[in-house]
Length: 335
Image (cartoon, rainbow, N blue to C red; front, top):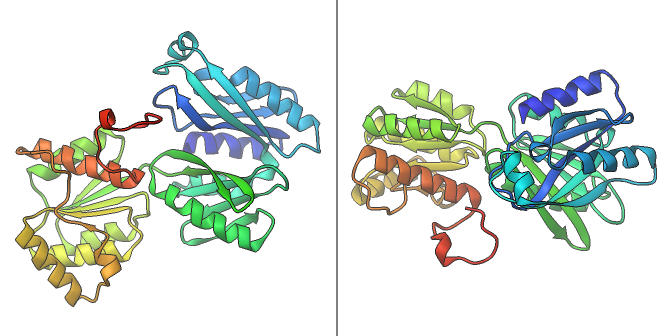
């Protein structure tokens, strides 16, 4: 998404009157790029791409119409993409996508500054009667307004959970009588692994497959420095059993809004850790965020298998899911 943010900043610097289109809800299609975004100026010139180009033409038409009609706050269009067009564009299958189109000037510049700087941010757009946009950034004041301070506060609460998910996420929610589109953008997730072992190497390999950044630390100083930089998009897994390193590492991670905090070890080790953390003054709420033992119950034996179970639990926690077989679920498939 940082590439798209850089494109937006270039167009802003050129003072181009433009609209911006991106998917806010999809069914089918399979995995998508985090850079699914299209900029369109008043002449119809476009930059970026939507779903491999399959939705570009309709988005360009909607963007030019929006730019020509000052009374229109936004455009929301549904696009059906058949199997042949989807697979030709590199998508897994056909499906449906809702595309939101807005004037670039209606979106606070702080959103693009955050994304370009590698920081998580969410954009909330009010639909229906009334209009407005709100940029939500962890640890910083929100920018913009949806029409009232009360609605802004409720929207912030709805947006914050999306900022625990890596990459690009979106949701349609209803707050009272108001419909909102919430889009979250996160930088590349950072996994801090505390303790050097074969499992640390296996976790680093798994993180690489997912496009995550991974850092292994072995000293208290390096560990605390790494944790201090983490956001809700990031994770900490403590492999080190010695309390001299493990306890301060877990205490620091649990006191920060880190997206996932896990610790390896037996039930006896976990109980000893909790006693140490309680002695450090951690609250029951903070201790409740600890995933210990870390990982899902997959019957793992090797470091590589254990790394899979840990990463699987991280993915489940970050998406708010339980680890259930897709065969035993119903509704839209979003593994």
